Image (cartoon, rainbow, N blue to C red):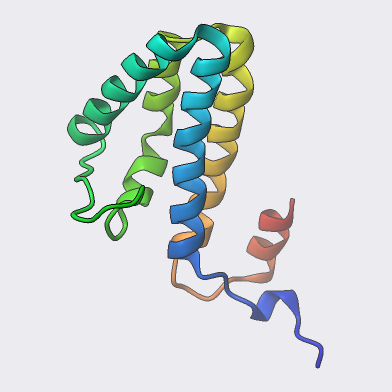
Length: 128
């Protein structure tokens, strides 16, 4: 059976949950590699407060590194704040690639979470 790629829809919520969580963990790894364990712990505390205060994120009411519902989308829209915070804890050499990944993810996330039919021009844009 051959299925055209334009007829396939990703399970966007689950995909975006996994990638958003991975991006946040990667930020902690960037700080750990650049500045060590103590600075990483400080970053994680500051990141938690940032997500609650600026992104409107609530902790998930169960064990496991996860967010509730569309929380990952709130975080995705606020990744520039995460990048700004990261600059306070790690060197620019380490944070620049991370921030580039955040910008790329912010560009793709709105495409993944919309529920409208995708026009051919949008398919080409997504593939680019």
